[in-house]
Length: 308
Image 1 (cartoon, rainbow, N blue to C red):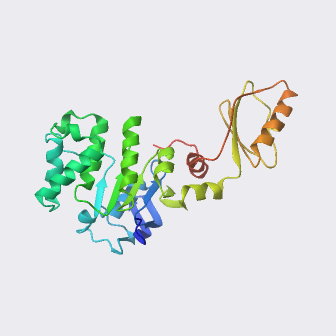
Image 2: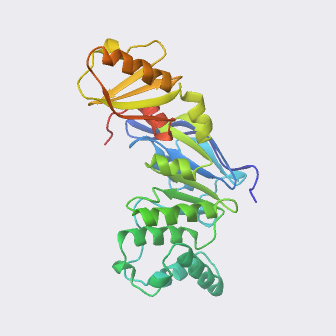
Image 3: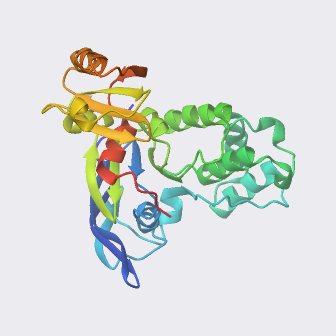
């Protein structure tokens, strides 16, 4: 059953590092029992926002409310399970040992810590590695163990920074199903650069850039709000003059030899293009018509320039 109300509220949140304002007035309400995706290019302020949310950083201005009250940085460890982008495990301990150890560090009774460790290892496909040293795990297994460690004290709020980074397709599917199974009884806040995964996982998303929220809402709602039609994509055998692709209702983008046109009626657009190009001895290759994706929205809002 979905919980009601907001698990997290961020009000006017700001954080500066020297001359850089990493978070520049973020306002967000994250509903309880949902999966909330925090998206943005490198340097957008996602990880800093998560650290402020978890009490690991103190904001320069603004406020963080968690589960109905102001964030108490001393109590945050019990309320929030954090899986950082960097893998943080004890490589010299066995997999089961470190889960039980961290559970006891959170004052979880020994028997409960053992039960939770076993359930998490099973849910994340690590049961057969319970007695293996963590140092011998693959990178994907270490990532999954990192997620398990964030949950051993059964927090109502789970925060995941790039939880699927470096995972193979099978592990990515397992982690996706696990995250979706977590929702409902707890709130999940995650960052990811994988727009397809964000679309599949998130009930709601916010896209950040330069420390500010550009848009926030359900993925389908945002795509419907910002899309100006469907997409026609193709490759031209030879370069076409700009006038052949010009139309008052078309938005045209070129990347190398590929062309992408956003049009209210892409089928009619395709027919007209074929007619225009035929008269110049040109043809279309690799034609595809599709709906807008979350990645299309992301690129439209944040641009195509690479970020370091």
